[in-house]
Image (cartoon, rainbow, N blue to C red; front, top):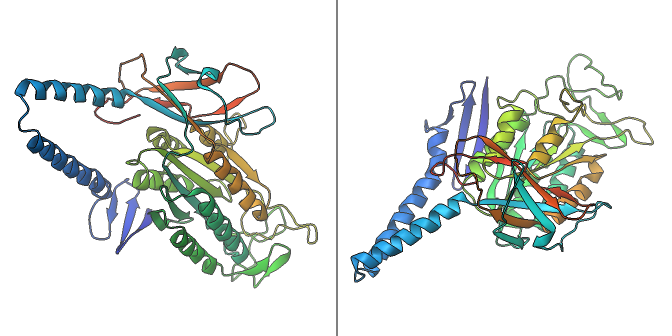
Length: 399
């Protein structure tokens, strides 16, 4: 089994294949790891040129003075690498955003031990990199229309000139509709392409015609509506592709918004793979679980997708656990017509975030997972922040 991933990089369109062995290649034979290293290589060249320019401009400095400056700069770099940064939101007991709290209201614990907070800010003005991952595994034109309209409005509300937004679709494969850009018109143009993917005519209150699946009578779901037994939803693959391709090398706030019509189906990546890559690269995940309820007039859910979501051994929804572990949330969307409202709620949350940073007292970088907890001095507040990070060696990754 292979997963085809399409990246559109102007002016060239790259098509990558992820095989069952985990090797990813482009149609031109270039490995995905090489593609993903392309940006760091360019940055390394830029840094080298800057260092050279700095040396030329400061040729008159004494060797002793230059050595002292270099030592100071090296110390700053090491301290920055040690820094653990957290972006988070807070809601009160009425589930309203609490965005005017001071640093003294918060304490941060790592593996149960309190850590001194070195910086704190209200960071709605920090650069935001956000991607929307759309479940397009449906033949229903009206559902795809709802997704396109809601996504366009979300990008218009959340992406500012200094921010970057991108859009992926997933079903039997993962496709990039638009690479990161601040061009709202371009984002709208690209997401509007999914409107033409629907092959079944119908409305939320009208049974589809013609039958969505040609041939013998298709199986009937619990709502009395035919459904697609061959449906695939590579949700976990979409999370990994979006993070590794578009977010891992970015700085500032990073988030993915996942519009799901069901749980994952047939991804090569696992739930653990998806969660690990999000935590490693400090990406906040929001999950919108669609439940399209039966309409009053027809008493049927006119959708070709059965909205079922996986639960763990404790009966907890796994996508909810994934979102909360990264500092995001899972929202239940009861009807595609409620999708725009749900995305507006996420947009508002992204505009009311805090940030804090600390240097961990535990300086043993052994690659193990460390739990983080942000607590408030007063009761009645709920903090949404990532649950921890992997303490990789300092030369391998920033936290």
